[in-house]
Image 1 (cartoon, rainbow, N blue to C red):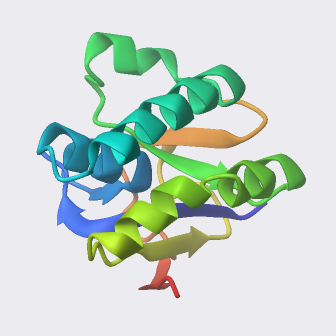
Image 2 (image 1 turned 180 degrees about the horizontal axis):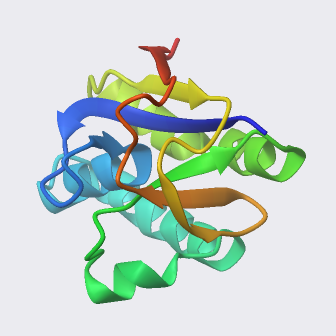
Image 3 (image 1 turned 180 degrees about the vertical axis):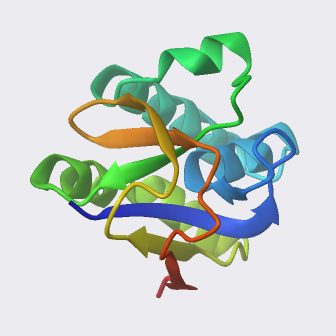
Length: 135
């Protein structure tokens, strides 16, 4: 099975990996970059995705394993990504360059998985990850 991750070039403090799309847009909200209307739409989208996309339980503990999540290249994983139009639109509007990283196997130790995604820690140095700019 293949996996993919949408992210910016910024390195996240906790994971020391490129910041994922959800977090990147959350940072724009925290910085009060979005308009009031966009912020309201952000919270509406966040509520929706937290209902339909399981939130891995390690986030409640502050992500002590410094794990990153990767979508599964499956109908469920691809569908949830297609629904993330607001996040991609905000990234484009505010000049966040997005990248997609792909790999044919888990790039680290899998500590969580559901129908949509896996979470991995300890990325393998030999992981065959291809990264390109998302158009």
